Length: 237
Image (cartoon, rainbow, N blue to C red; front, side, top):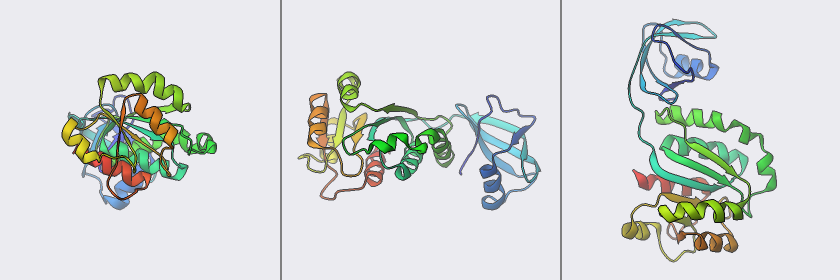
C-alpha cells in the first residue's frame, strides 16, 4: 500500500477512524509508523494528501489534521476488453490494471472462458481488488468495470459503436502486424482486446475485425494473459 484509501464519503480533518485490519497491519508492520507520524492518505473519488496518527489501538487507528490537496493521477485514455480469465488470475489482473490507471475494464465471455468462471465468488470481490490496486497505484478513482456474458451481442451492438470513434486493436499472436508498427503509424489505440489463456478463436478474431478492430501481435513470443496485459498497458507511459 503506497496510499491508505479512505472509503468515508467525507473524511473529517478533525478525526477519522481506520478500522480495516489490512490497513492497520500495514501501517504497523510494513510502514512501522507510530503516534505523531504523518501518513499518506486519499479520499475515494477525491484528493490525496496526508494525515497525522493521533492514536493507535489494536483494532483501530485514529487520524487527525488531514489535508487533502493533491488531485489523483489522470486515468489512461484506455479501455481494456478482456476475456474473463481463470478466477485466480482475475484478482491480479484487476489490481494491476487499476494500479496502472486503466479507465474502463470490460470482462467478456469467450469460447475459451469456462462457464464456471462466471459463477466464481471472485466476481463478487472486484471492489476489493480495485481497492488494493488503487492503494498500490496511489490513486483514488476506481476504473469502470463492466461484465458482458454474451460475446457476439457485445461486439456487434456496443464495441462496433465504440470503434467508430476510437482506434481498437485485438492482440493475436498470428497477426501480420506488430503492435509497435501499428501504433507508430496510427498512434496508441484507445481500445485493447485481450484474450484469456489460449487466446481468441478464429471466429472471435473475425467478428472483432468485422466490427472495427485491427489485429496486432506482440512479437515472436506468445505471452500469458497477465504478461500481455502488462506489456500492452506499459506502452501508454
